[in-house]
Length: 139
Image 1: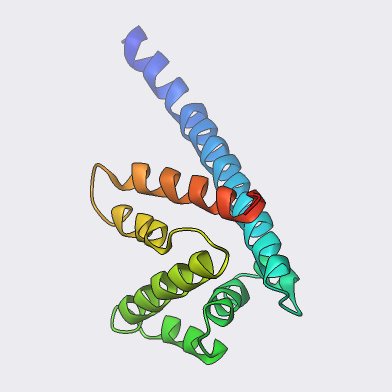
Image 2: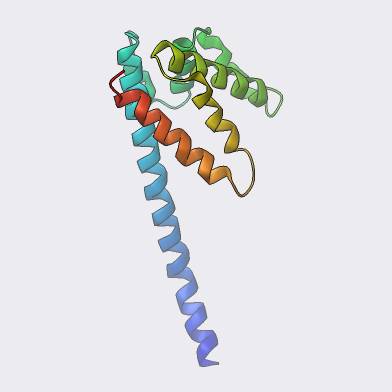
């Protein structure tokens, strides 16, 4: 009985703590990727690099940097049937951006790894490292 009381009293705070940690990590990743894409947009002389900070507008920024029209971002409004081609366009745009800054374009394929169970986290970490290298590297 005492053990059950302890478990019930700990469950709520543990869930809250997990939520706080997850939110902190998510905010940190958003800030990091926004800073990186803003730096890349400045390297590519984009007139509005601050778009990297605005959700959905940052997708249109990436598409523009890759040579696509910004309106492709509206594919996000079509569940699954729009998301898949949009993801393909984003990978191609990443590839073009990386190559235009003299980095290997295939690094953009790191995003594909994140789609697979069990190894997805490795793909996300690899892509964030690549993004940092492209943004702040000296090539």
